[in-house]
Length: 153
Image (spheres, rainbow, N blue to C red):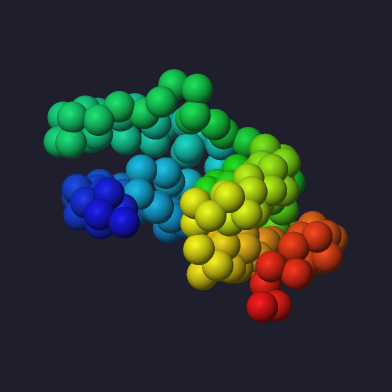
């Protein structure tokens, strides 16, 4: 949690630059991940060197070269474990595959006495919370069906 707080404090200057100097209208950031949305590809391309220069000179940071992506909105925006599409939100494929595996490991830890019941329930509820932000009804139901026993007690 402290790393998110420190990132928000440290990156505030970047937020101010984007909103007040560059006048970007559609910008969102969480810790060190951010997205800028525009229907003008050239505008986005022209922003990149300005962002790079500001980050380097003011914050001593660089953009990851493989993570700067310009794509059409119907391809979706990969952000914070989700793929945000114009009419719905899906869970990123890797995240979707990881959830059942992690839950099985968590149940094993509980069975071995390495975590308590509250930790187990918290973990299950946390994953259900992640799924509640996406159009992943089937996966939510699958998890509830497999792990309901651990939640009901």
